[in-house]
Image: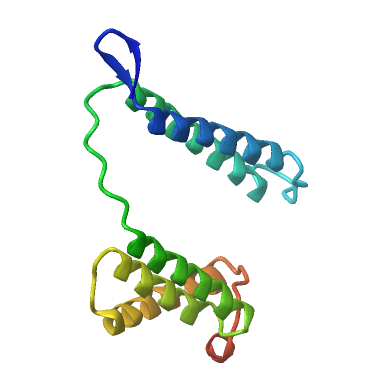
Length: 158
């Protein structure tokens, strides 16, 4: 950790994450300016990127505050196997949606692989839980919000 004054250390990784969050907020806000308004009155969906940008700025402020405090907890060791499980889950999500399997099975695999990354060993049970959660999310988005999610054979049946 770098020293800013005697006895006061700066946590550089936390500071870097804060800077990256500010950059991401700026990109999000800049990109939101290019969206065309679809609402004739009030706020439309183009307001959401601004909400996300504000949230990212608030997270960045929290990181800056924590970077200059010296009472940070010790970091855990990097677990490459957990990262690999999450990467496998994301790759499977992209592949399943890309090859037309649909949203629900893709979310089930992502959920199960992420749970495995966090140490759970009940992969089949996690697949079932992910399937139920994916089904609920799919139904909420498609039926309640009338938004389109990737469809596969199962989703076409619903």
